[in-house]
Length: 258
Image 1 (tube, rainbow, N blue to C red):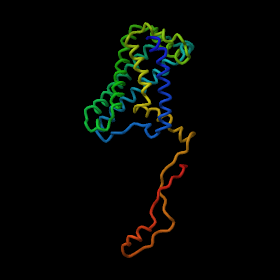
Image 2 (cartoon, rainbow, N blue to C red; image 1 turned 45 degrees about the horizontal axis):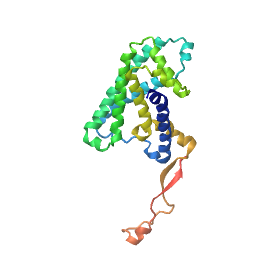
Image 3 (tube, one colour; image 1 turned 120 degrees about the horizontal axis):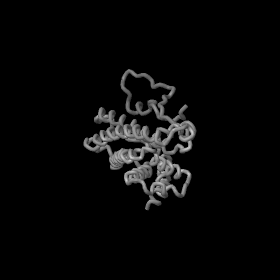
Image 4 (cartoon, one colour; image 1 turned 30 degrees about the vertical axis):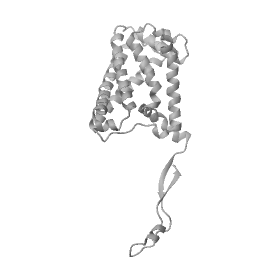
């Protein structure tokens, strides 16, 4: 089971996440977004959304660079494993707590307001709940990491994460003896990546890739109104129905965006 969850499942999750996102954009590009409910309980939405997004972005990029930066890079610039571990715990803990507070506000708003629940589908609530659980698990790993301030635990997870992308057959064995909270955190993270294309989370990718569509891939189009050169004749009285039907009207035409 360890070999499947941490050696095979990562490739399944990444494959479904990447290909599913591309397929959704190619088939239904206008669903590559998140529906808005900002007119309802706007203040709670704004505060919760800012806290959640700022915290999640810090956590995401911290994991991205912290786990995927080759170990020899830190050794080359003279940063010891313990010197990297302590700032990671502090920054990650603060960012995770901020994201948890913001996510809790968003979940409370969506779950308790009947008007917002009617504009939500099951996945909207489920994915937010999964993200909150993931944040709780991530914060739970801090207490285990405090017992490994020498950085040994961090190096183990760095080797495992980099082993997935370098197709290291022994990558799963690196975390065989890891604490349960770490394993749950890893598996749930992979599950979130796998269901990413089928939820509102896909709007994250739109912020990075949608502009490329208009710059390099496909021409954009916009709907504009044009008027005929001849204006209707002025009349002192109202038009008869037959004359009104013949009057020039604005029509919609599609022109390539400049």
